[in-house]
Length: 350
Ligand code: F0G
Image 1 (cartoon, rainbow, N blue to C red):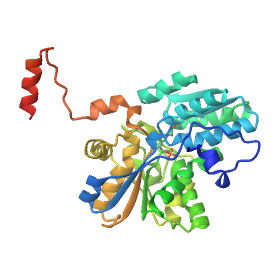
Image 2 (tube, helix red, strand yellow):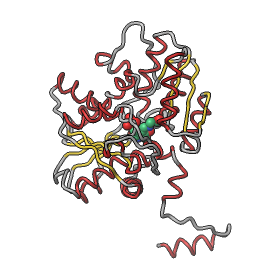
Image 3 (tube, protein in one colour):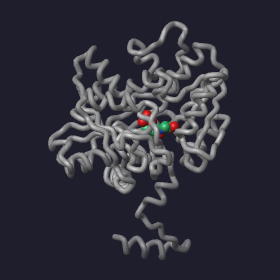
Image 4 (cartoon, rainbow, N blue to C red):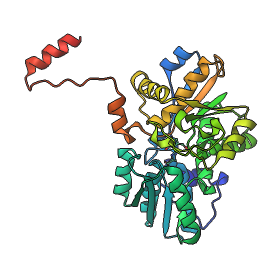
């Protein structure tokens, strides 16, 4: 049985005899080959479906480590700022460990499923009339003078946990892909993957991918080379204007000979619909930025035909039902409760 990240990867993680073996059996997510899109693009494209983690996003990998280390260090409460997924994961692992979580979120900009999770896992939820960057600044300051453990990705244990996804990809493919495509928000995850690929390569000779990060165009601070005061995108998960791991992300890009580019909301929504309707894989809009970036990069030649590419689908599509319903082109028909009318409609469709 899969025992979760701390036990499965302890030789690669900062764990010792005092680290609790906290787990919700996170990790070990599937790598799914996208048959239709691979054929259409002329590449070999897989997605790492991180939406199948216990709270529905990759954040569980980092959070299990961050909360375990917080407990090891005697904390009774964890705090984070979040666009939604970090807060869901923090609340879940805090609940699992029997400690309190506090989450600070941008009012009106957190998808419904993520908010539902924070409620159910028992977080204290604080919404502010501000964006993620402002919420993060506040919790960073507060955690310095208050007895709470900060579990945003500026906590180095978060990146330690998240790097394990790179290990899994190397094991699933036999080696690293040519290109790793990943959404970029606060820029922690791209940094964690790059660390993971480097460590695994050193131990197991699994080679290194080029790191291709994709920001949403309205929140593309790294691409533009300056923070964005009022970031906007339909992909609320990555609606971030001043990424905390900015320099680590640039290092991942430069050391791997990769790139960080922007994708428009239209490209994101196209990819979002495409992977669900043509491949049966439902990921949230922020996740679809990776596949949108792959499509863009094949079109502009920065991913050559024949490349082996892995795109990270960071969060489950069920997280954000409202965007799904509004972005879908499907029309629901309303019929009377009358079998002959239903039959008539179905025969019309056939
Ligand atoms: N994809 C999803 C679904 C996310 O929730 C996030 C970040 C990212 C991608 C970007 O990852 O920040 O490491 O570059 N969500 C954070 C949160 C900010 O609060 O849940 P990153």
